[in-house]
Image (cartoon, rainbow, N blue to C red; front, side, top):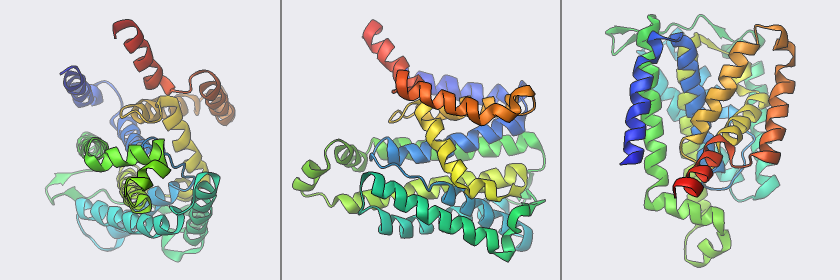
Length: 308
């Protein structure tokens, strides 16, 4: 009941937040929170560190942006197709990478992500270094005008809640329990008769699709799809978000995304804007050395130690 009440409070805060904060900033935060949650499904619950998740974020964004600019379909269909294409790309990349472990898995995902980056850099439909600009938001279901920032925010919130629910349901299902067993002791899981590569592949595909969902939504929010979303720097940022919030915790990536996005937003326009990557690197080092469980993980430890 405590967890349910917590989620209810968080939902109520999310519903009233755009009346006090800029809706576009909050929508951006939700997009990156979903991206971080999708990444955490792999790192936190399967134990696989992917350095290539930006490929799926960017793919969803480019597909949705192109469809909105050229096909005239409604935004929900464009987002759905962007998610499907990202999931299909994840299924392909998963087949190529899940048989590897540790640093080899990370390097394979990084290499495949860079391949996607250079394809989008050269492809004529992406706009190259200029990106896709002026992507129309359209009308949700042909009725609700998403050019209104409040409407856009609540649409993004609904998408985030769906993605968060799907991840929550996945990790608390029998399938999720097998993923945790693979993370803790893969040889033991294999000895129990589980085909661990198939489980990893399905988890990778789900994670890629949700990352694509985040990227598709982000393109509509900013009306822009660019190489930034598919660059390896973005893959590094989502690792940082997850570590800061707490790897292997359901709410940690949301907190981590909130911290990083807020810091970037408020520091980029000030005197410290030129040093933002140095500050982020410092935060990463501090988390690794002193707070390895992240903000949520450390809070859970303190709560259990004092309130049991």
